[in-house]
Length: 244
Image (cartoon, rainbow, N blue to C red; front, top):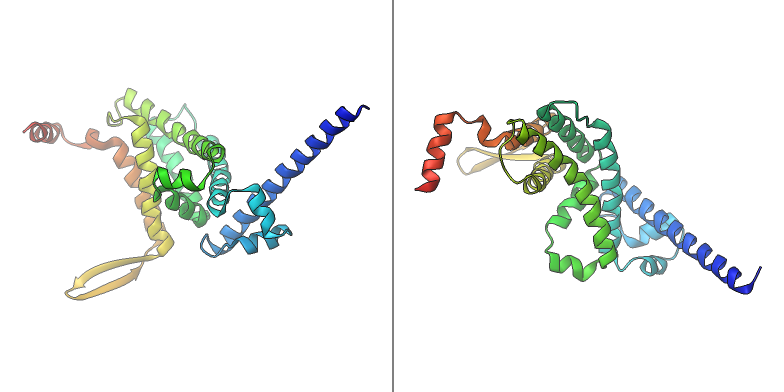
């Protein structure tokens, strides 16, 4: 074998080792997320879990934010697999959306760290993200999000075609439902609700997880149906009010 071919072989082996190590780091990050939550998952702990020096992590990733973004990509990949399994074009659009929403809600409840990661990302501006995450990783993250959102958008489009769902831009509505569900499930993450039944004496209660789950699913369906659920006279009044 020529020296050139040997060099190519070595490069390929090095590239494969690099990809394997990156997968090991992402896997360890997700394990720690699921065990401790995103706040308590430190780079030192991730390195120990993989069995490497933490300096090696920064050779593979631009920083902590980039590593966390790729861990979110891993979550999103598993989520989309579950959505694909639950979806069926033969179902009525409302039932399809319900099935997909149940999968999404249950995934968030099963992996609270996923919801934390996703919410953390939503709180950042595009400028901040591009300042901390390299373009190739942003593309991976955007692709992973778009894949799941496009699945929802197609169901919304089918519902609009059959006259069940409100006529709203499906890409916008899919993103809205994604954000809405993450926000509502934060109540389950915190586990608390506040009421003011007694003046100047707010009361804190524990949030019932089953109630949070059911409400999140109902809210998604209600948002998709939108004005279709309103009586016709109310719809006309609303449109007249918008014109005035």
